[in-house]
Amino acid sequence: MKIEFLFPELVTLYGEKANVEYLAKCLPQARLVTTSLGEGPAFAIPKKNPAAAPEIRSEERKILPPELCYIGSMEEDYFEAALESLRPYKKALEKYIKSGRILLATGNAIDLFGKKIEWKDRVYPDGHIADCTLEGLGLFDMVSVVRRDQTRHNSWYYGEFENIKILGHRSTFSRQFGGSSDPFITTLGGFGMNDETKQEGVHRDGFYGTTLLGPLLIMNPELTRYFIGKMCEISGEKAPSELFEEKLIMEAYHNRLAYLSKPDARYAMGALG
Image (cartoon, helix red, strand yellow):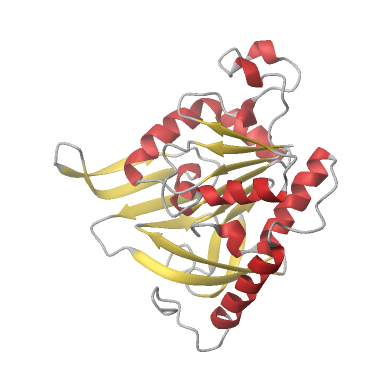
């Protein structure tokens, strides 16, 4: 079993590295690999004809693709570098997620997978300010709008997916529009991926994208169990009977759930402190 972490040199915000580190703790038999910019991603490794893809790291060619691939939040200025590294592997990525293998994108990484990113009032390195549009990977019928000239959106979140109550928070300059044919989480409290929708994120086949941040899998042990179950189905391995430090994270989860599910809960960031 293998877990892939995409672009650790870019994904440095909100402690999101903890998502893959926690999965590795739950699945000690799994191999955690990191893919840096310019390297062939492990999800693109061919199963039958490694010689057909010489750009892929030679030491990885004989290893099957990961059961789960993860990418998290980054500074918006890094979008272009991430897109440039992923674009050559778009077809491989589509095949990967269609197979049911998991790609989990959190925070503003979701913006990479829509049709385009409309960036309002971008401040360039030389100081000039101008709007720009970045072409996304186009996996979803979704447009992201980035406005750093406005107040960052900060909030707690309460939603549901597959009868699992999802808790989290967001801190973002971007909003996502579209993607209604591929919903992920339904909002029960707080805000969806824009101010006019209850939809949070997009999901199709093995792709799960959400604007929620931070150690999402630690905050949501039942969601972690869901992903581990999927990974074990793919690998043919037996799922662990317990998550790593399950008692501790379940206690924290239920304490947070008790607050965020209250009828009078406030979701503006700071409401818990």
